[in-house]
Image (cartoon, rainbow, N blue to C red; front, side, top):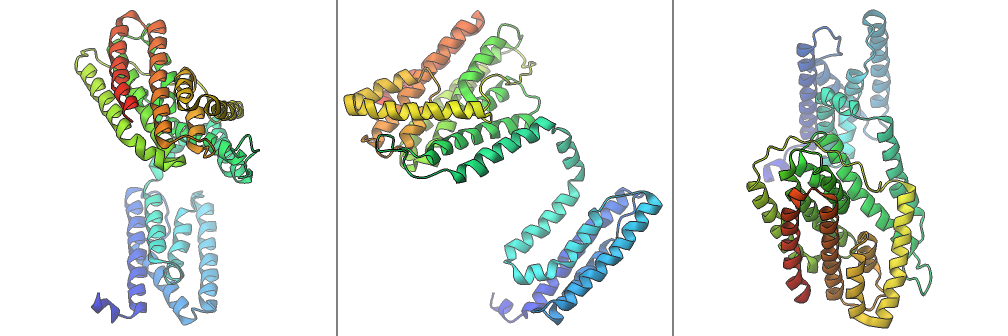
Length: 421
């Protein structure tokens, strides 16, 4: 480190610019070798010289940058002439090599004026984007018009509506702000959207277990119902019971993540109970898979259930959030912690996300962190019971016993956690 202090900064920056420019040029040469019919602009020497030219013209006048700007204009004109004749002669319209050449020319002011990590990030990003051309094409081919519409909805609810909402409580009797309500919607939608993207682009075709895990991130109840119905028509019934339990295990991951976002104190108190439940559920899944000999040839697509990016769904979630806020305040005022425990069990038969998010955010409720943790465990246990009921009613008879055993293990494990939390 002491030796580096005696090395002139200009020398270090020159070596960095030259090295990056050479690497970019070598990458361009690899394209020449792989695609000989295409006329790409320059290779290793050309791009290295462009980088050196940018360095020379910048250090001549680093304050005014006039030589550098003039050189950039001249280089752009030359590249424009090259591009014109390329179109005219070979009918190729790609601009990638020209844009990369201009980025290479701009490396020097980037290195001088920005932190080292920024220069490295941009340089590496250029290399990666050039190399993954085919992968990007295959990835983009999976997009449909609906995908961009869904992405637009997510940007609207998370990036436009949320910042515009007020942080002030709506009223004395309703201490939650509009921002908190919508933030809850954004958080749940983000997790669900992430699950959707994984299913769509990372696991476009997957078997029972992977589908159950991804569906559990979105909604373990909806996934359990769908798999139960599939058990009546699919041959790979043996994988459905552990798949349903796996979806429930992901419910604990999702709730912990929501707790961490909105109330880290509650999340830390939930950590041990949820780890116990996740470990117990995972062991149950593995044992049931071990006892299953049927090959998993079925392919599933989770389409049913609520769409978290639809305005109607967001509105319903917001109304449920508001309803549970008012109801929770009423129950606490009248019946205290016992009332919260009973309410949590009742809420378990519905969508528990609005209820527990209300508990995590509402600081005006006069209950302890332990009570909130207990309420969460009771709600998830009740929700497991209702999922088991759904599966027994909707599923094939052959899966009922395994499903009952899987959920019974989770429920029995939850009871001492609820008592001793």
